[in-house]
Length: 328
Image (cartoon, rainbow, N blue to C red; front, top):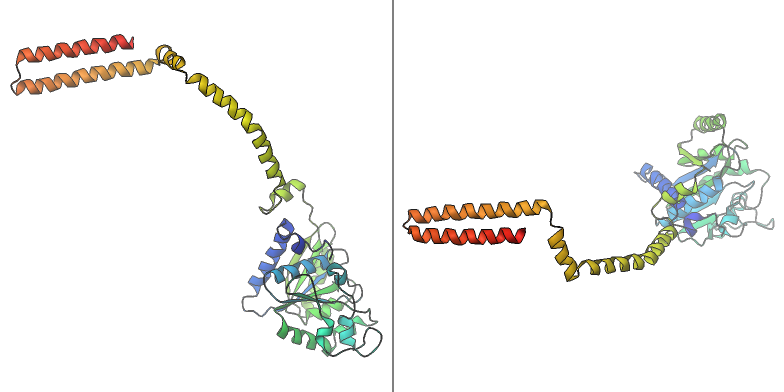
């Protein structure tokens, strides 16, 4: 199995998440469970059609769907190299009825479908290169194949041929439920894409959407694109922080010990008392004196002797004078 299957080998990568987003969009289009066959095509070779097809099939299988991937590019199919399976027998052998060694092919569909290393994902390779791929795809045997597979699996994904070169994919667009067109950034020409879309619509095919592949992206944006990305940078930051923290902490502890010594605390209280605190203390004393005089007036109105009142006032004044001396 090649490294092209990023969705399987690196399921937490940003690219795998993009394929899951594509899968989700397709599922939202399939609200009535009528979308069971999807064709993936492109305008010209080299736009990443087979790569997108294989990873999309993997994401559907990861979602618990039973998936069959058909390599319908019988001219230059390469899905067998991506999944590391045998190239024959495949689709051309099943449709033509000709076996691997020019013998009569088996009628059992299971003989043409192979298991992959991905759970729930099965593949039918392109098989031997036939002289007439278009005629095989338009045959009733192809329709019967899709009908039979619909009963056996949840979704069928077909890797077709580029539309601008041959008509194979145009034939399949009439047989499948929907078609996805893969394009390449700064490579696919708009005129070619418009022509492919028009051709598919003219034959009665349905287009689910267009996938823009090979979009350039910087390494910085790649790291920030998804929270499942690599944690190596985070580990490096944590290691650096843990390495520097003991020294910084030790300095702070020594500084704190120096400041909390009794003589330092006493000096701070005596020499660095803010003027605001001094004023607040005087205000508090004045307030206490006022409240005490107010209280004495109330008590005197209730029958307290004048001698006792003067004695109390004298004690208060002595106390306040002592407090003022302590503050100064």
